[in-house]
Amino acid sequence: MAFKSSSQELAFYRQKILYFLINHSGEYTIDDLTKMFGFKKRRIQDFISEYNQNGFEIIVRKGKICVEKVPEVYDSFNKLLLYQNMQKLAVLHEVKKYENGINRRLLYDIVSREKGIIWGNTTYHNIINFLAEEGLIYYDKSSNLIKPLNNITDNLNDDEILDLLIFLDVARFISSKPKTVEGIYNKIKLQAKKQGIYFNGKRIYSVNNRRVIIFDEMILKIIEEAILEEKALKIKYKSNRGDIIDLTVNPSGLIYLDYKDMWYLVVQNNRTSLYRLDKIIQVEIVEGSLSGFNKDLFEESFGVSPEELEDIIIRFDKEQFIYKKLIKYKAVHKSAEIIETEDSYILKDKVRGVLEIKRWIRGFGKSAYIIEPRRLREDVIKDLDLMIKRYGDIDG
Image (tube, rainbow, N blue to C red; front, top):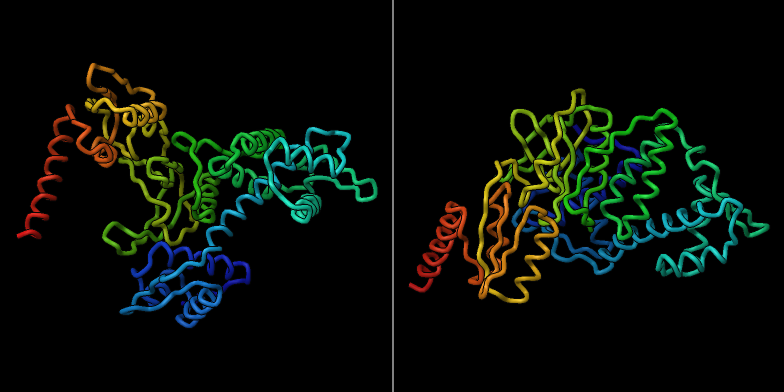
């Protein structure tokens, strides 16, 4: 059945399909996309034509859609959108300090100097007008005075407050100035509580609170809405085998892992299941309930793993670059212990998911030697034997 949409929904899916094609170049046919997204074949072809008119080079090779070229301005455009949001938040945060108002020009100078914001007069003018039109500040053009509203949420209904909280809950993990966003988030959350609006902000969790550069914010928003409403999710998910499967899950929470720069949907029923957000093709909220969420399970993980805790002992050559990496590791893994000897560093820790640590260890090359656990050392040896065999076959 063909997908019918409003112009706003169409714009969302136009961007969604573009992201999908960039991330899965050469993997899917036009027919695959019609089944996944519910559009007619002609609509998908029109989308591709529009992308190409805007500087992309997307072709069909052997039936598969391939992204050959992405315009240089594309990445800059995404960063610009994020930066403009931060400009708005910085202005809003500063205005709130001046109950009796602040001169428009003085506000510009303060935010530019103290927040390190770089902008032109036109951008600043547009941001002030935007915040005023959205009911977030009061701007008296005759006196050039900008005032905070006594209560920012006065002009918002309950649904709009929840939308704002969901946005800020995500933004505090992706912001280049997380403390600013965190402050606004906490104040809005407190105000919502006073107004009797329930918001569960404890099911989104970021290991080490590192920022995310690119993510599918619509999917992230829908998942958190389901968590907030304590409902289930129906998703189309690309499995490790490459096929698309339909699932209905009871979400536990969201977790971001800086080691992999990746978001996961967590489902904890009889066992823990993890779904990468970049592999979720479609998502919708359906009737159901939540499953439990134990974020402590992931604080001791190397990677995202539900395995039992296990001791690791690794010996490293005594080099300055290695020491810096180990200190960085310890900053994330509080249970880690670094022992310095005359000619080496010994790392001791208790972690979940020891096999996931392999890639990290490989980054040290011959400078690292696994003492414990034995199965991890044997697994690395097996990988090396396979590599030697493959290269040997090529030489032979």
